[in-house]
Image (cartoon, rainbow, N blue to C red; front, side, top):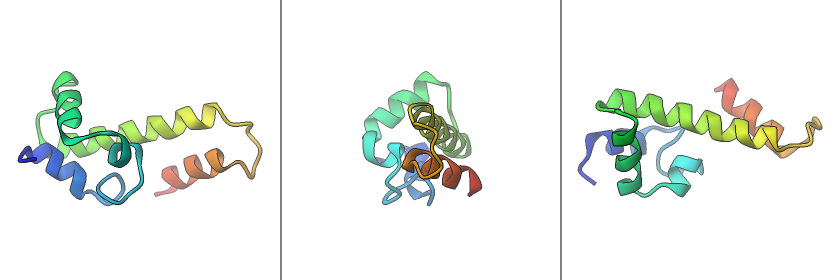
Length: 84
């Protein structure tokens, strides 16, 4: 994909290729372009910010579905994400 916004997201270590995040695993390049266009994201810097915020919300949704126990992997994932 030649879209510089997608290239910026794919190259960002926390959400890019090989990160095992929702952005990495669930979105094709063309789907990312659709989402970025829909949300009015026009620059590579804004695209990375969008991706980080989207992943944060994804983790929070998981946290909302957890039992809340200290050793719950959803809680650990959320805490790990927000400590980075």
